[in-house]
Length: 152
Image 1 (spheres, rainbow, N blue to C red):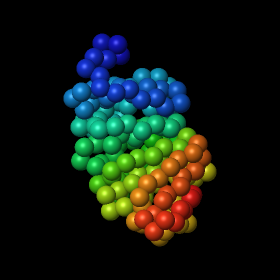
Image 2: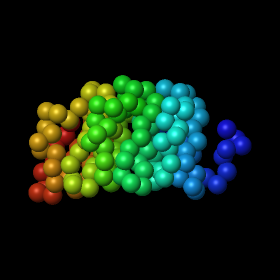
Image 3: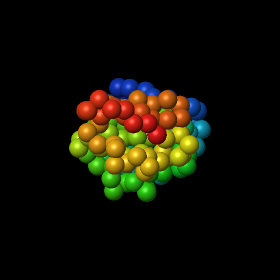
Image 4: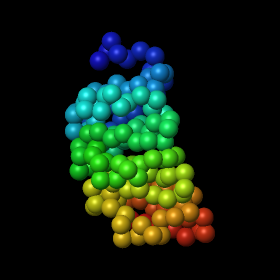
């Protein structure tokens, strides 16, 4: 990997892996595969990346607002169940084993381990008009424009 680690603009770390975002928007990963250290399954999708978010898996936000995930599937590395909703994303938040994406329409999409905030279905209708989100190691809190806070 050392020969690939040039023209790097940012580096990111999950619990046991690293990712380097290169100036050209591509990504180099190394470390424990389940923690995101092996991105070979999505390598051809890791272009035009703006930022990488990490827990026990990794999620890349691309410039077009789409999201690419890899690493431990149950901990957010597998986003197939919500992939069709992961468009027009502005920001991603990470707990230890889940992710929450804030979309341009101010709604939230969550995925990953349910005990770490990966399942927001119980309050999904409340997750509208969101200003910002905060994450702990095992939960998320969303602040709505009306000043109310919703956690999951």
